[in-house]
Length: 190
Image (cartoon, rainbow, N blue to C red; front, side, top):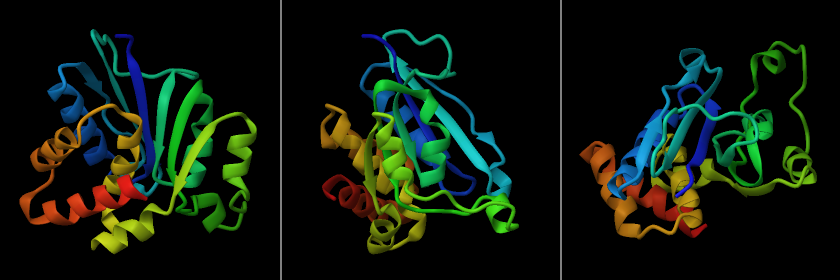
């Protein structure tokens, strides 16, 4: 099997580390060689964050170059647009509709770009957009956006639901497991 590449992008504190660990566990349990990068970016300060998950028969490096991502999973619209050049021509973006103002917007030096979904689609990108924050809140916590996104991403993988559930059980602390299972289902069925 050729190596597949997933980029998880967002803003610090949104849970991209748990999402990448969940995917890494899931894919290793399916027998793939998996490489997961560490979080890159200003994760402690609300800045842009990216992690890479690569899987296949034999993966030598965790790094994804421009034009190589099969999937970009984004917690925030501007981050999806920022990393668009990394998407393969036939790649898939799965993004939340959430908009978090970057520092130039907060300081008034810039304004948040408009019509980002349309702009990404105009490049030929396949963009799956979902209000993950509303679904996470429906599940019981705004912090479950990451798991809502994983539920949505599961549509693009030919893996049994039980495998996803097993990885959730392995990666999520027991006291948050039911909430996260609900968040996963809401994302999957949206």
